[in-house]
Length: 489
Image (cartoon, rainbow, N blue to C red; front, side):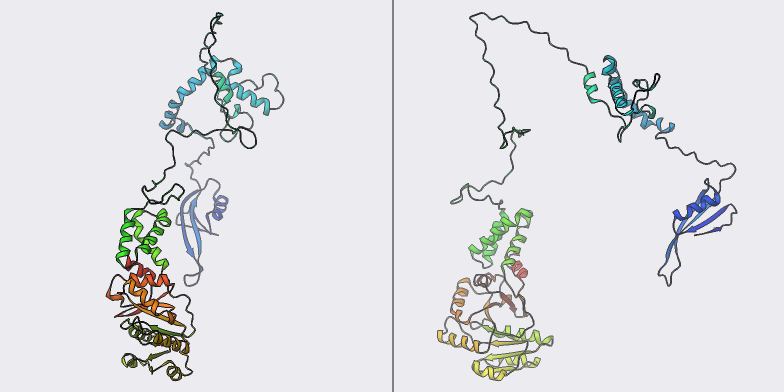
């Protein structure tokens, strides 16, 4: 902390880390009546703009001869405040209430004066032994300031003395009592009127005591509930009450059916979205809810790891196996991965596409020859393009192909299904190729239709993850959200 002098000889400049640090020095040098003229804040010190410390600079001087220190007041209301329009308005509003209280107190006996009762009771409890004659044990009247500090009793609470509620009730005007009725002498022939029946007492609880209170619901009070759809087959009151199904849900279901899903699967997906998604959003978001449910049911690759993979593509003629193998191999080679490709009983089409990329394609007439030519190589990805097999293939041919895939130690068998395939044809093909043990489904020819629902539903029913989406432009891993958006835009 430091002090300096400005151009004005009466003004001194004080500098320190904080105002609290400076004020004691100002009082010491200039006196308790010093006047602060200016305050500045800034940064100082440091190296290269770092480690700077804040400081406060204050210009102050002592009072001049014609200046007088401000009078420090600690009362709660000054004369100006009491005469302000706002305070006067409050007084005018409170005057009728105060007059009514005063009139009630004057009409009551001295012991019913609630102010007297309040003050006397407090003083009896808090003031200790009685004061001598002429003391202040007399009650405070209405003409005196009840809330003045000299008239306050002992501990009065945060907001001062509180009115004596019992005295207020006693001082309130009583309604005129009705004159006593003269006794009625009944003739011997007159029969007394029957006594009115009393209401039944409230039932007792398990502990044998009546409940402390009872709640009477207002007329027409009921918990709102969505109406139960009428006319449902087999609907009973024991069935759970489901959320209201908006019209947009029916439209979404029809759109899924049009995209290739079966009526049963589409209805089940929409039902789940309505029952468990609609309670948390508005009906306008029903399409988003349906897409989320559909995407959640589509399984894809999980935890592939970095171990070598041997993938065989199987399917009928024109299913897109060769194109899928070529695109997957090119994608891995483009990032420097080690890839091996086997064309099992195939032509040179695959070799012509991959050799310019530096990928050697192994041509083999059977699985044993392919294993010998592959040798001890263990690339990251080994892709096998298999001969076309389908509904017209003899079962023996499918059995031989399955044995060759086991010999080549295939750990992933991907069934290529064109997106244009119908649901019935997809089921028949999957049943015919069951001996091959498909583990995944490739959606090929994905750019030839906007309704790939049938192959996707086949993967859902079979429990096979969707691995790749193949089109003329390339191949990519399956994305459930994109597929759901394609089925339900």
